[in-house]
Image (tube, rainbow, N blue to C red; front, side, top):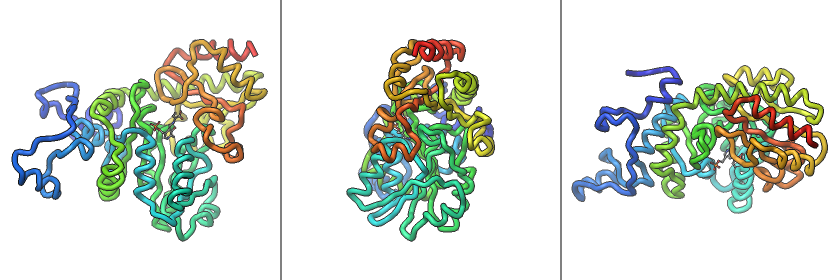
Length: 392
Ligand code: 4LM
């Protein structure tokens, strides 16, 4: 049956029990290689003349199920699975650029993406610049003759700033430049960049897609031709691919994504409202807050505001660290999207590699904290935050 609704697709797409002895759960094809029935079969598969598996760095049945599922969720033609979010980012950026090219980026990116962009500039002379992407004219003037990729996070880690994805996609089409969106913070349940005209959407699947903090993985979706090109070049030959077991854990985690996201969003909204009112908090950055500068854009392109809240505590870095250390239920850890509420200090953790000058430009102060709101009872999360704030 050809289903259409997201909540059904996350459970069924990519897997047919009838083809696997009726097994409700998909099998894990824990194999590195596949046996050919003849030398000619092997040769035909390598030549692309015959369908079939060859070797698990190229493709694996369990991983392929996940790739089909994420493609359905993002409403794209072809999905690719990687060994980490960064493996996806690097395979895509290296696959779409060559020496002398320029990448136009959103005003901030995850710390390791920043590191990759620097490495690409230093080693391969592929330049980049960060841009607020707030208005059409300034985007047009930031595009150079050498711009071959527009790379966006929205919401941006950890400042929660948004980029108007359909506006950027429309401008990029005029210049024939692909738009790549890191959709990690929203998950495909809350935001679908391909529907808004973007060309490739990618995820750190480690986060909401997994949901249980037990996988490092990356996923990407786009048009058949483009993704097949990446699969046969920077994915296959750099080799940052996903293991069958991680694909299996992701197939399992993804089934509950819509239910989990609803709860993450509900909890985050309640906590953002409470944080805003607390006298020890300077400002709260949450796209679901009506005072958030891009609240209307959030409503336009996202189904809901997500489970991440950044906030600035009154005081300095030492106060921020004291607050973290006094928490009891909330865990001090990087990563996000897990059942457990996690807190981290971007200036010294996820964005520690970003030089101070760039960090300040991006809006990451020493007092900024990022809370990944979990699935616990929101009252318990708040009680923990409040007891720690009150202790300062
Ligand atoms: C973190 N983030 O923020 P892998 N894209 C975005 C991310 O936030 C991340 C990655 C890619 C965090 C990790 C420690 C927007 C990671 C990279 O870690 O390679 O799966 O994803 O806490």
